[in-house]
Image (tube, rainbow, N blue to C red; front, side, top):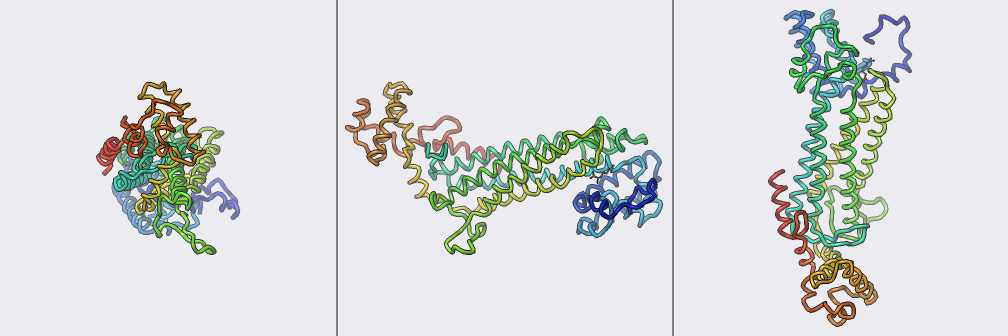
Amino acid sequence: MALWGGRFSQGASERFKAFNDSLHFDYRLAEQDIIASIAWSKALLTVQVLNVEEQLKLEAALQELLFLVLSDDHIVLDSQAEDIHSWVEIQLINKLGDLGKKLHTGRSRNDQVATDLKLWCKKKGIELAQCLVDLQVTLVKLARINQQVVLPGYTHMQRAQPVTFSHWCLAYVEMLERDSSRLKDCLLRLDTCPLGSGALAGTGYAIDRQALALSLGFKSATRNSLDSVADRDHVIELMSCATLSMSHLSRMAEDLIFYNSGEADFIEMSDQVTSGSSLMPQKKNPDAMELIRGKSGRVFGALASMLMTLKGLPLAYNKDMQEDKEGLFDALDTWHDCLEMASLVLSDIKVNVEKTEKAAKGGYANATDLADYLVSKGVPFRSSHQMVGEIVVFAIQQNMALEDLSVTTFNRFSSLIEDDVYSVLTLQSTLNARKALGGVAPEQIAFALDEAERRLI
Ligand code: ARG
């Protein structure tokens, strides 16, 4: 049963109905639709569309429905209703007859869906903010456990300079911090209530929209009815937060997949989050991380698709906008899932300290320190860079590390190199040297970890 039959003499084709209906995905707005309907019934009381007794009856019936959908929102799916707004109204009419038919006075599904979706976004946004913090906490704990563990740092996938495993963890804590801040910012901006905007021109009843907004937990009412029903910026913004955060998770996944590879062998992931091969018995694959990397594509896609859908739409509501929900639900569910999965994987990771240390020592990762050593002896950096480049070529030819070269050999390139060079070429001294804020010196790592724990734990 549709709620708009009066103007029509023919019923909808089944094919069209299936195409047009949105209940199979917007059933997820059931809770929000009922809560907003209760608030609307109270607003109708203030303008005498309902009397006290009627409002109480409607509210009680809506509360009953709420109880029902909270215990299992899938019950909604058995119905033939067009969308969740129709479903709620049909339930009320079935239960209360004519009184149920009064609820939609002064309201449109356009301001209704806009309100429901914003309420849903607020709820989901709070859950996601918590997931971001949870993952940060997991990373900080992992960083603490591996505070001193050396890890080769890469640029261009070439060993560049040693870092620590904790420094790697804290890099992702920073990214997630920005994700949190973007999410909070977006939640602040979406915190305005469209209810009472009617179909597009505003409701025909003198409702105090500011009070209505506050009663639904919004900071304020929206200011312009046309914009209220046409606006889906929050959908785009949330998906764009999700997209950027998924790109962080995807980069993290890529790092971990490499660290977990047979070639690097820096970490081992728990049996609980890896899977085997149906053919090759020796395999233990990092599927969780590969799926996170893969799912990032799907979230980016949802954002791109919504941007496309909205870009040519005239004001105000157009049915194209019904396409906002599936992408949004899927993108935010996927982001949620991936945040939790990343946390699960990272909460049980073993770092192979010998392997990371051996790798950090190789690859001439102390070459910059040799150049800095020459700088300390008065050589301008650009010249010391050139000299060390030549020393590295020589060492590669000899298949030796820099610290294995004798002073006599060093002196073929620069007479300024003395015995004290060896102390600057050790792994520890390359770390110790990076004492400036944000660097990998032990005191900086300790400071960064303390700070992160203070913020998050
Ligand atoms: N199911 C619709 C949606 O999700 C609800 C709004 C319908 N409004 C309308 N004028 N047909 O967008």
